[in-house]
Every structure is written in structure tokens, then in C-alpha cells.
Amino acid sequence: MLIRRPADIKSSEITDPLIYRQRREFIKGAAAISALAALPLRADAATKLSGVKKSTYTVDEVLTPFNDITTYNNFYEFGTDKASPAIQARNFVPRPWTVTVEGMVKRPMTFDIDDLMKWPLEERVYRLRCVEGWSMVIPWTGFPLNEILKRVEPTGSAKFVEFTSLNDPKRMPGQRSPVLDWPYVEGLRLDEAQHPLTLMVVGLYGEVLPNQNGAPLRLAVPWKYGFKSAKSIVRIRLVEKAPISSWMRATPNEYGFFSNVNPDVDHPRWSQSKERRIGEFLKRKTLPFNGYGAQVAAMYAGMDLRKFF
Ligand SMILES: Nc1nc2c(c(=O)[nH]1)N[C@H]1C(S)=C(S)[C@@H](COP(=O)(O)O)O[C@H]1N2
Ligand SMILES: [Mo]
Image (cartoon, rainbow, N blue to C red; front, top):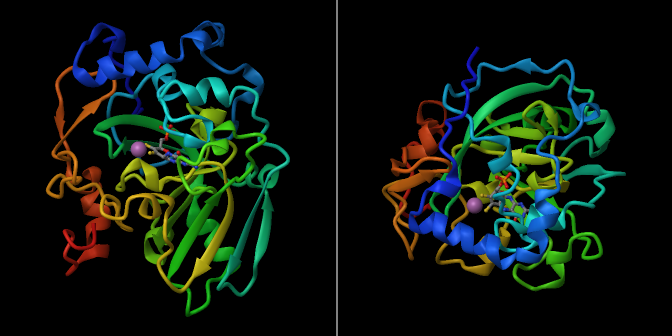
């Protein structure tokens, strides 16, 4: 059994600057706090996923508690502070839902989420490193993105994959503010998208994926900064040129296409050498490729990672 119990340290008992900011963010959403306190910590039994097998693509590290993973989120479609998505996505209904896979493929296809949920699912514990300097250890449930790519058969000219999140300001209140150029768009090079570590996620802690974590379908690309793992995906397009992601469009000097976790290449406004694991007091050293170098570094052999950041 590779899963250990989470540490008992409560993040509310620590007062480093990041936590301080986190608490202020909570206070900003004060009106909603009582609503949040009323939420059950875990979904009911009906949302448990069955037949999930444990994957060997998993890290043996202390899991971040469910409550932290589901109340400290970046999901700008539901607000820009960490506490917002849990509250603002509370009544989001991720059904009916399809994901269309198109572009440079031999067989364009549209998949219904309820069919995808019947595919063989695996549980994988992955590290998630946010570009902001915090990290978590998350037990995701899903299947490799490559299972989808194999079915649509990319043509020889397909070199990149573009992911588009839902665009629906009626259901995603954050989209009523122009904080990003909606919809949220991210991209991977084709070999990155086909890599066995690149996971389409439909669950968390063995249960159906909570809305705030990107229901019903999001990516997990563990060697890249968290923002590459797009949430609530409705379209996957195989393309010839590198897609321009929402973050590149917003601040091109700060966010490059690759965005591999790299402690040696600082963000223009802050260092990337360390991270604070949510729930821990002392900062950890950030590892190249977020600790997945043995599996992924070969894909970048010969590339200047300062240039291709
Ligand atoms: N559509 C969409 N996807 C997104 C984001 C977002 O704002 N919108 N935030 C990203 C960022 S910055 C991070 S760190 C992760 C956070 O995932 P989590 O809330 O499940 O931990 O989602 C990423 N995917
Ligand atoms: Mo992030």
C-alpha cells in the first residue's frame, strides 16, 4: 500500500506569509465562509468510483488532506482567490458533458463523459506544483490521455495538442470578469500529451471529481506547473503549431509554452527554487521536472530550458 496518512499539522496553525495570505483570502470571502463550513467534507457514497486499480505511476508521499485539495484551488472561472472555487462552483452541474477531439486526426470523435467514466480507471498519486510556490500530493483517478489520442489517430502533421475549457459565463461566474481571455486554453507538445504520465482525471480520493478541481474532466501533467493541467475540458484539438495558452496571452514574458517545473529558472517576479507543501511548515527544495525527471527529461534533451521555459 503506497498511501500514507496525511500529517496532522493543521495549516491554520502556521503563520508563514503564504498562509497569512491564504487566511486573508478566506477572510475576504467571509460572507461565504459559513456556507463553506456547512459543506460536508466528503461527498456521499453515491459518488464513489468503483473498479479503480492502483497504478504504479504513483509517488509514495504523504497525501495532502482532501479538505485542503478541495478548498485551496486555482480555478479562475470560479473566482481568483483560493477559497472561491469551492463556494462558487458549489452548484455547477457538469452534465451533460462531451469532449470533442478534432483537428489533425484521422478519426475526429466526440466522447460523452458518462462513457469515459466506464473506461478502465487508475488511481495515481501525483505531486502538483503551482507556479505560485505551493505544492500538494494528490490521489487522482483517471486514464492516460493517450487512450483518447490512440482512438482518434493523429495525422503526421499533428505536432501539438490544444485543450479548451468550458466557456459559459452563465455557469462560470468568474468568466464575467476579463481576468483571462476566455475560454481557458492550454497546450502540450504531442509527445508530452502521449506520455504515459499525462492523465485525464475524472476523480479525486476515489470519488467523482469535485467541481472546484475541474469536473468532470481535467488534465494532470505532474512535471509541469499546475496551470498546464486544464480543468473542465470540452475540446482537444491536434494542431501543427504550438497553441497560445491563456497565460502566455496574458503575460508572455512570465509564462512560456513548456512551463516545466524548473528550480533553476525563476519566474520574472519570484524564485522557483523552493515550494511550500500545503500543510507543512518548512519549505522544500523544488525538484527539476517536479521530481519526474527520470521519466520525462529525455523529451527535452538538447533543448535550452532557459529559452524554452
Ligand atoms: N480551466 C482552468 N484550469 C486550471 C486553472 C484555471 O484557472 N482554469 N488553474 C490552474 C492552476 S494555476 C492550478 S495550480 C491547477 C489547480 O488545480 P487544483 O485546484 O485541482 O489543485 O489548475 C489549473 N487548471
Ligand atoms: Mo497554479
